Figure 1 (tube, rainbow, N blue to C red):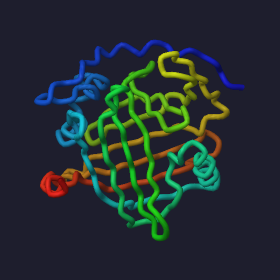
Figure 2: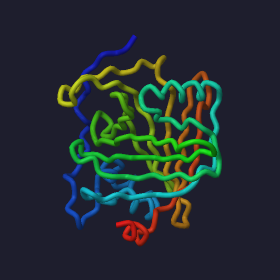
Figure 3: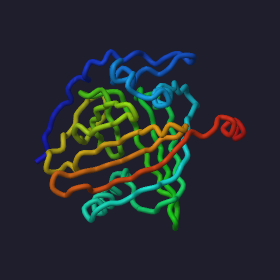
Length: 235
């Protein structure tokens, strides 16, 4: 059954306080450590060190170039509608995709909003919040209290996020109560990669693999940052 546990204190990462407006955001750098951070391409370091002040947003635009799932992945994506549909529901290719990042001030994290067009019907919109907390130092909240503990790693081309357990948070955040999902209920190992393309763009790769059911879902999107000049014209 569910494992009932109070969360352990966040792993010590000596995360700095939010930076002043003229400084970089150092939180992802602190999670990786100096050696890991130095492995990343400069473009990736720039994207993950943007300090987002209140009212600011960073927008990335692109398209979905690869999307597939097996039967178990299809069922899982549909079941996840109950918690806000955090997994892509369709496999349309060549459709427009938009990712917007804003600061989640009260929680000390970031809101990530992803919009995927479809060949028919309205776009799918996925919301999540990355919070710098928990035993791994980083958690992603998906909706209805469900979340994922994440570990980060880096190589010469990409920043990777790896699932390290799924949980259901209960009650007010200050109480810190949660249910850890047992292994037999977990959907598998989730890896999300931000892979630099060397031309100002990057690939977003979502890969979900189950030890018995195989690769349940894979999605690849190619993105680049929306030019600041266009954002200024919208004001």
